[in-house]
Amino acid sequence: MTHIKTIETRNLCDSAKNGGCGECQTSCQSACKTSCGIANQQCEKKADK
Amino acid sequence: MIHQYKLGGYNIVLDVCSGSVHVVDDAAYDIIALFESHSREEVLARASALHPDIPAGELSECYDQVAALRDAGKLFAPDTFAPMAGELKARTSGVVKALCLHVAHTCNLNCAYCFASQGKYHGERAVMSYEVGKRALDFLIENSGTRRNLEVDFFGGEPLMNFDVVKRLVAYARSIEKEKGKNFRFTLTTNGMLVDDDVIDFANRECANVVLSLDGRKEIHDACRVDYAGNGSWERIVPKFQKFVQARGGKNYYMRGTFTHANPDFLKDIEVMLDLGFNELSMEPVVCAEGDPAALTQEDLPIVLDQYEKLAELMIRRRKEGRPFTFYHYMIDLTGGPCVYKRISGCGSGTEYMAVTPWGDLYPCHQFVGEEGFRLGDIWQGVINAEKQAEFAACNVYARPECRDCWARLYCSGGCAANAFHATGSVTGVYKYGCELFKKRMECAIMAEIDRQMDDEPGADR
Image 1 (cartoon, rainbow over the protein chains, first blue to last red):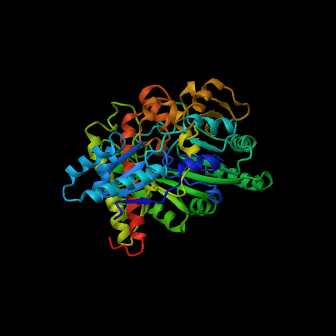
Image 2: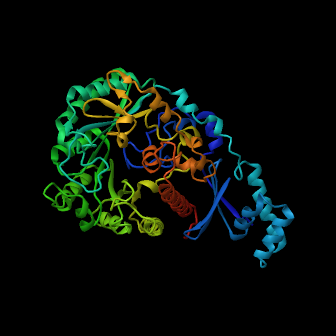
């Protein structure tokens, strides 16, 4: 039986190869304005993911 | 490195460096906890003692599944990112892509907890002229390199106290963005006092997002968010915000509240926001000096952490009932989130993001405005204080020793430089109280997303 269910995620190690375009939103600019969290940012480079 | 926790009825295992998320049964949960520090035989012996009802063969099979995930790089992936820290910033050195325009260092409210000291930022009241704003937009374009998407937030104080300039600046930006190959994304942060049909039409046409300040319960909101006569603002702004949000027609907004020592039980405030018809919400811990009566205390911490868990439960419950809402910190896109460069580089304050005062000075971000030592330069000459900017350029998750062993480091990217500075005196310090809140929010966000994905699976009956 399967004991582990793996949720689909972006592979961060792979993202090192094609990431870093810098087009994504600045972290707190248009929202909380008082904390830094990047987990809820969207990648702008959708085609390359 | 892995992080294991149990929440919402799930056993969750995060593999920090690959970004993998696993939902596991009790046996796998215990085997994973032992896996790295024990031999196969030891792991299986302990697992057997912990789960006497599970046949040895099945535990062995479970062990093999864990080993297979390790071999696939989805468990215990090593941290190979440290050498990349600073690389993104080095690569994009000199590129500015976002400005916070302080169009009004004045405010029509006198909120007790305002980090901007009622919009004045420890200085004189002032509004930004059109000429200064226009030069700021030109500065942004000139320094944005090949970056196409440029963000400009109209901020204050209360930016609508200088609404004519806001409108003229947007018109100017729109008139040149095509020829310059840019796409401006405007946002507006407002306390709502001056919202009218003109503002609503403008914001819905031009602003990708609006941030509307409301603290929730009337008595909580009115205890802090008062006018200069001391009168609460709740009754004046709520109808305006309701009209504003309804007219937005699906465009983004955040109903943004601040919680303080007066309301660590902020879920009640979120429920009020929901009852008022708002469903894109953000609720932020107050930023203020230690010892301030509004500051959250150690006694508040367990209450706040519990509220975050209950908030996740509420979010899940309402989604299942067909009445979903979003909470800024619980929005997590596991498949389409940021690349690792972004995750280790921090927020970009002082490098790709700066704040502009009404008289054109540049600061690393809105929270540093008024701290004279942090003035970077101005919009005519650019950055002059290269030494100070270098401190921000060096800000990344690996610059903070405390972050190196933290499981949440690739979700928070080292935290807020302003929070760190105010808590420790250094932008590369760590605001530990904020870390506790952040980690709990991430655990809740990931759990809620797992629950959503489980429900989306064919045959799901949860």
